[in-house]
Amino acid sequence: MAIDESLYPIAVLIDELKNEDIQLRLNSIRKLSTIARALGEERTRKELIPFLNENNDDDDEVLLAMAEELGVFIPYVGGVDYAHVLLPPLETLCTVEETCVRDKAVESLCRIGAQMKESDLVEWFAPLVKRLAAGEWFTSRVSSCGLFHIAYPSVTDQLKAELRSIYGQLCQDDMPMVRRAAATNLGKFAATIEPTHLKTDIMSMFEDLTQDDQDSVRLLAVEGCAALGKLLESQDCIAHILPVIINFSQDKSWRVRYMVANQLYELCEAVGPEATRSELVPAYVRLLRDNEAEVRIAAAGKVTKFCQILSPELAIQHILPCVKELSSDSSQHVRSALASVIMGMAPLLGKDATIEQLLPIFLSLLKDEFPDVRLNIISKLDQVNQVIGIDLLSQSLLPAIVELAEDRHWRVRLAIIEYIPLLASQLGVGFFDDKLGSLCMQWLEDKVFSIRDAAANNLKRLAEEFGPEWAMEHIIPQVLEKINNPHYLYRMTILQAISLLAPVMGAEITCEKLLPVVITFSKDRVPNIKFNVAKVLQSIVPIVDQSVVDNTIRPCLVELTEDPDVDVRYFAGQALQAYDQVSMSS
Image (cartoon, rainbow, N blue to C red):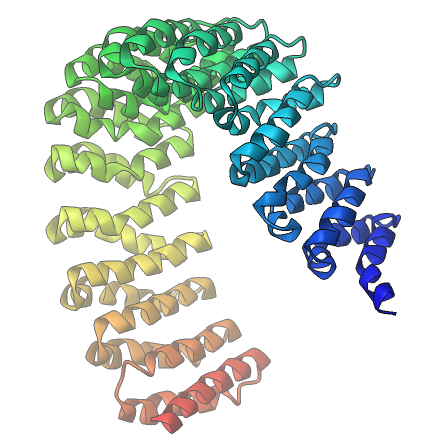
């Protein structure tokens, strides 16, 4: 009987793995670690792993789960001494057609290889890499490219030369998919190679990839530029990598040029600041003026980062003219990408250049017809304020901000509201009262709920910023004026504003000014107002004295519990219950 029981887990697994129901097969694979624990290390090695190796499931989801599970299976086969037994099933998975299964199998092999002993890597892992690289079907050759960097450091010099030669052949493979994989993994492989071979073998492979006739291979080689640049000495980098970057920036395929624009900062880091200033500025200017919008988007998004490497004079001379052109680009996405980073140029260029050159660009972008462009400018205004000061900012940009406060797109109005407390703290009380105070009240009666909600929160943040005395003079009277608005949704906003302001204003003002208004609202004809009154009263309880609660708040809640509307009764009951619990505990 004991023997039967010990066979039970594997029997169940075999049954489930052969089941037609994919979910059962998946569950079985995900329980592999449990089954392995039940079987013990030796039987896992001798029975479970060979069975998985012969398992010819054709469902990608099951194979993906198996590739993932095997990556963490070393403890279940007896530790790193036996890690090599996991290689055969993963080798099989490296040859399947589905890309995500192969990628996961390669990831698991790398994880296992990183833990294997050097002798085992030589005996088991390196031959596996060679077998995959020599595979008849392209899928195995693709997978092999991601494994060289694990095998290479541990093997003999003779085997190292062989692996370099095999990788060189993969870089010239007939199948573009294999060359793409070779280009993607070249940086990882190069990082493990000795400096002498880096300049010879790896650079020749790199040159093959950079001249490939497929743009999908060349664009992956762009990433290789940055990776190799970090490994080479600066003079070699300028000699070998820089000409490639300049050629790529003029490549006939826009996808390759896009990749250069996207990776530009990393490429600049690779070749160093001197070469960037002398050689890459013209290349970058070309990308900023590219005839493909996608390339201009990528290049525009890197303007500030690129200018950090240059001196302000170079940036003003070469980059700013392009920035001016991009601010009126025909593509809204280019203008949006520019708007998201252009504010960061102000600290780099200094006060005078910002006022003369950048402010007109900011203003034109603030008036852009596309809301995202306007939003991107608004959200970064503080960067400009640090450079030019609040007086100039308010004179030049504030009229545009006031105009945006009434923008037809509600998201733009919302962004302005969220920026108001920051603007208020920068402008100071006097300026705020003159220019922006009336706007804050106007938003309480906006047609869009999100705006009204943000406006109420905005009043609370302003009260915190300028203090209760200021709020008592400038916010409370204007809020209370609006309590008789005929539309119940606007009355709800006033109620919400009161509940947010009460904690900031303190007990005295709450009892004197705010609580009477809330009690009045409890007689409102609209049930939604009344049940919100119950919620607000519950939030006011901790702020005011016990006598106020007993004489004013509790009687009002008791009255609401007898309301004809079920929701009003419910929320009033909840508020009373919460109050009673607090009273009992205190």
